[in-house]
Image (cartoon, rainbow, N blue to C red):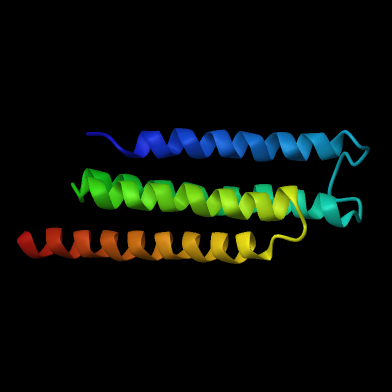
Length: 131
């Protein structure tokens, strides 16, 4: 069974939502940068934060999938990643008073990345010790 493309597709849909949120704010007259507008800065950072974390998370997930890690683990990581990014995106790009979403979104994302990193290192060690 193939897992990573499902989460790559779902996360790309969320990324498109963040792109359109930036475009919506840009139509208000800020064509470049944040124009000193704190709301625009939040929307830009919501988009950028997603772009900074998700490619690596998906790459590590793919490595785990190719290493034949448990489908349950892969789905758990994928679901956690979606939940974390929805919480974070909502908190940063759609409201200003949702601290819970920002804190938990970032925390869960970091946890997913840490689990993926340790899993990939474990896989590398396992392969090295076999050879």
